[in-house]
Amino acid sequence: MNEATAPSASAPWGVLLVDKPEGPTSHDVVGWVRWALGESQVGHCGTLDPAASGLLVLCVGPATRLVPYLTGVDKSYRARIALGRSTTTEDREGSTVAYAEVSPRKRAAARTALAELHGLLMLSPPAFSAVKVAGQRAHRLARRGQTVELPPRPMTVLSVHDLLADPDPAALEPWIEATMTVSKGTYLRTLAVELGRRVGVPAHLGALRRVASGPLDLADPRTVTGLLAEPLPARPGLPPKLRLRWPAIEGTTVVGASGASGASEGRGDARQAISAALQAALIDPCDALGLPLVVIGPDDPRVATLTRLRQGQAVTVDAGHAAWLPSAPILSGEGLPPAPRLVLRDADGIVVVRREATADGEVLRPERVLGPSRVPAPTA
Image (cartoon, rainbow, N blue to C red; front, side, top):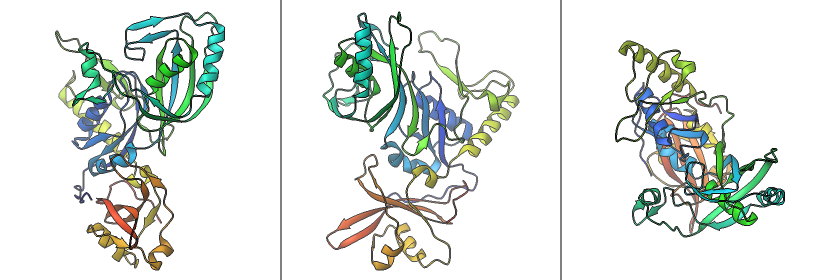
């Protein structure tokens, strides 16, 4: 169990939903939020490739302890698959490996095959991925020109819907797209290649936008939207870098974590505006988790149970507990065993609890203890 560390009265913490634009890495966005909030504890709950856009879930401050719960969830994407060309990276960023014309019959077959591409699949992740090979990231080995062959692993496609096909009959690389919900660890680039294999044409992932992550949705009005990625001046011998901007909040002031042009006073004003806007967008951790919630008041007799859990003690579930404990869904957090989980909350913070069957009966076991959030708490 992770012990609680009470945040300072002014420290922002909670969960941010960010609409990541194409271009920056997920770590770039994390760095921008750290800079804006002045908070080093920021972590994302599932990376997005630089070429992908959409929902990036970030935990801020003590809420970073909740990353395992928000990472191991199913995710939904709007994926566009380009037919007729394969690439080294299995997306549009790579060099061409093979090219072939796509006949009308193949285009029709691709639509059918994509609709049927669901269920548990055993597929190899892309060589250009973060999978580790002998302690090194596969993409680093691949960029050095080494041959990387990753063994197949389970990838699950839960649903495929809202299919749309390229209306241009003369397109050299006709596309087909759909909204796909997949399990954690499923690579959409791999699915694009697999679709091409089933149809008999080379293929790659042409575009990707994440639209949901577990219970969290890109369409949530609290999502941070309108970010722009602007290239910084080229530096000899160094890779290109981007600067994130939020024009709706910054106005005409140009700022960036790497140091921006303009008067320092203007930079400070813009940073304060961004910080205030991000803090206003923070979501209560209980809301983000989507787990059953029990709110306990100061005079509630259940305080004794919550106190024991907060102290790290397991609590045996008796008839009295069973009367008020809600049914809890089985959640598989990253690195955590699948089990029913719920959240108990009072004015002093929250406790994420796992319901566990033992030889002596069911127990409540505390997994995460967090102090009070500055985000307004839900009422009972």
